[in-house]
Amino acid sequence: MQLYNTLSAEERAIMIDDAGKQRLTLSFYAYAKIEDPKKFRDDLFLAWNALDALGRIYVANEGINAQMSIPEENLEAFRATLEVYDFMKGIRLNEAVEHDDHSFLKLTIKVRHKIVADGLNDDTFDVTNIGVHLKAKEFNEILDDPNTIVVDFRNHYESEVGHFKNAITPDVETFRESLPIINDQLKDHKEDKNLVMYCTGGIRCEKASAYFKHQGFKNVFQLEGGIINYAKQLKEEGLESKFIGKNFVFDNRLGERITDDIISQCHQCGKPCDNHTNCENDGCHLLFIQCDDCKAAMENCCSTECLEIIHMPLVDQVRLRTGKQVGNKVFRKGKSENLKFKHSGELPNTALAAAEKQVDIRQKVKVKKVLLGKAEHYYVKAQVGQFTIENQELNSGDKILISGPTTGEQVMVLNKFIVDGAETQSAKVGDKVTFEVPFRIRLSDKLYKIVN
Image (tube, rainbow, N blue to C red):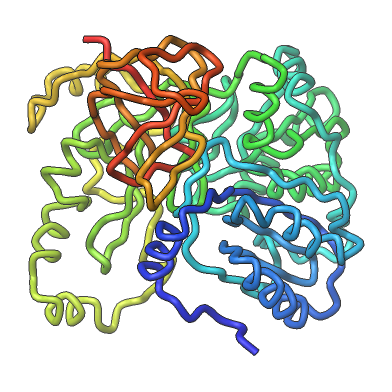
């Protein structure tokens, strides 16, 4: 009975690409009383491994918290594995704004003391006595109420690249740190203000809302399904986004764009940027924001010290790490004296002025582009991609750009393509076009026309 992974991440990535199947990135959670988390964990692993489901999942006596990648064709079978349990019947699956076949490359299910570490030891605290759930439209409306205080219950490296306008964004690295900070800051407003909160997918706010009701706050509200579900409802209902920037996610993508606003900056040079990376030095692995030019110059490192280390023989790199603490105690989330432009929220004028003085290392030319549509499928053996045209007409001879978090930015001239089974010279909005693409594309990829 296999209860663990037998493939490396690299081997799994190759298998996924060779299979050529579209995968969905999704998340879900449920608070429930689980008597035997170890057996629950093993049963889930057997069921999900058979469906080629991958992800990072935590289970505990208090419930389950999951972020996963599922083959699209296995989605209904996956739902059926959840419906076996009463507390997960009809559970909401938050689908990602941008899918990526490589968002997760292993199936990891861990038994934890709690699914969200809160640092609380209070037997009278009822995690099921939660605040009022708000859908996107209701959330927008309550944000406009001058009597509202909105709080971001994510960590500093998450809120730095994107947050709701006028939100309180605590400078914390863990959820447990934020609870006493917010409780102290708002202790005089337990009855006269709307305490409105949000997080990535809803699980942290579910617990936070119950905690603040327990602390005596009268008007407690939370964004149902978090930022992920909010973004989905914006598209479905044509609502204004009061969230600005990018939503940080805990998978290989490290973020999905909600609006075009870039509210953070490269931690090394100060240019506007919101792309997170991890330092290439395995003895550091610092999470920080790095622009393309600094990535090229620093080879994905956070400092000159780490840059020197990655060029050492592997045996010397291992020797330097020997005896040091490992794991999250060493892998700090974006806190380092080497990061000269580490700030949260809006770019200060001094940082913007510094960014304007920076000289591009590679003298990169800005490309003017217009969004045409998005990727629908990739036929691996034929090396053919399918795209849906959503905005403008596409013509033979157009110079196009295919862009995505894993694909990168690929430019090519489109000489011929097919619509409705026939080769044609133009495609209009609503058409599904197919053409040869000599590289792997993914559902998260966007198709642009280069216009300069």
